[in-house]
Length: 240
Image (tube, rainbow, N blue to C red):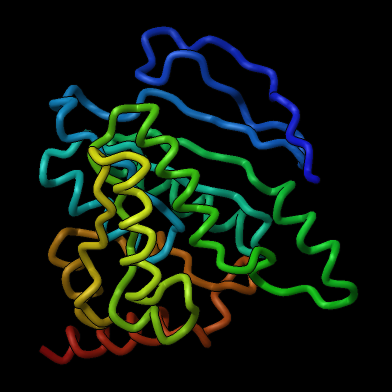
């Protein structure tokens, strides 16, 4: 059994989260937060999951522009690209005047990784969206949010089961059972990568700040579909 010790907490004056916890050492499930957004109606609070990539950054812009009380959430589960993803997510929030909430589940990811032997997968936790969405749903329940927003797009289901339409439908049903007032939303579900990038461009997304490489290096490897698609579309725009 994986034991989770409570992290040390500090009080956040006038923060919508009340007490919060700073990032803790690996092995603990920690939290880091600040003032989240401007004073929008609490009836329209949404937890928006961030990974620093094109899709989640575009969704963040969509929700912020719609007047949603945004609670941006980044989860570190010991993925290879965690450091770069965190930086990209924080940059996206800063550009919109938001402060990111972070959950540190790296200890859980490292436990899974330690059981892999010599193999070091880019994503250590099988079915990662199950873990991430469970944390987001719990946060939404605690913060009286009306929705959890996930940046799935039409092609993601071809890559891993926890991004498939079947999984989305099943988790949405489970969420409705646990928290009837919290809706699971994926506004990009019917859009392909190229469509998402076009939408992001119209919203003013700075793609130079996005990070989508699962290898976790300082620079994109150039093999990820998101990055190839951005490059192709940039060439298309220049031609017109």
